[in-house]
Image (cartoon, rainbow, N blue to C red):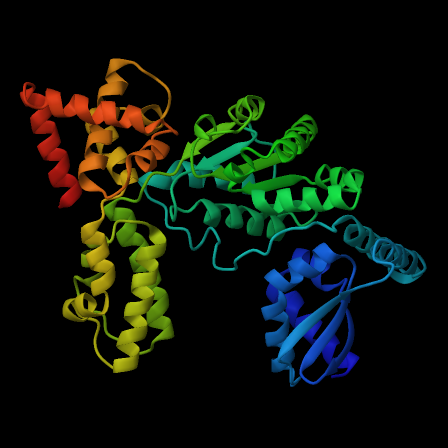
Length: 464
């Protein structure tokens, strides 16, 4: 493979991965040769090699093969003078741009932007945009808040904290914000990564004794987006650095967007000062999907598949059936529809209710078998007209405590989760608290006819 071929591949990667990812991760790669199916590259640091291998190697190999190269795998070797290479390369780009009189201002600006944007941003999923996000009552506030941040101007809330269970759209919204900012406000430095990646970068900086570079890098961004922040809980040094990074950015009026699987106050082993800081902004709960939202998601996905599988017929009532039966989360729902369309295409049959029941029997059985704790919490909160966050939170008022005990009781009755697992879903409570709540409801339902009626109604709603 020639350097010219690698140049063509780079152009394709720029189109597919976007400018930020290209500048941060592809541009620093130095192609060093292809031998016996192994394409070799020189990279600036060990971390860089690990990150490329994990996130971009498949993209690169695919484009190399498309360009006609016979590549089985990629190898990345760290440059001997790794620490200085990126800085020298950036300096060379600035120098060359400054020496080009015809287009000096634009070229110099672009070169400096490249130098400044060596951000360890995680790759964004091209499918996760605002256009592909289906809005319904359970997620409309989160969507509106994310849209406001994506406008790129000052907001009245900082940080924006999104939380909810698996498959409810947190990561989709995070990616959508990053995509929108990169498209509409390319001059902004947007850094999106998971809390685990933040921690990994920090540990790497400690190991290389280069913490100052880490601090400068993370404090230079305009928008910091951290996914699954619960993973830094219990990591003292990482929490310390995250706290100082958070404060530095807020003091500069830079926007921060955070996601987690629960509210800040409910993340066990997260330092109180970080909880307090996170609670200063807008906290938005993405509720479990309702029937209308699930149906909307299926309709959008089915429209896409109709374009992919030309001539494939979808019988009336199939989407409604799936929206009613599969209530766990959006990922399971979308995966079921993907399988259904693929199967119908392979066997050359119309997608009917009967075909759906046969093809998705395992998913449907699992859905019949399981009622999620999140769904129980949501239904009970709606029934008693209390906030879901209050039910899971620390409040002990009777108007909150009794619905909480009902939800604990139903979680024990309708799911196979252990008491410690149920406790974790109720704000990290001890299993003995769950036992007490279950026992209390068992005692009261024999004497309190209203409570007994409530339990029967809730069971019908959850099992129907």
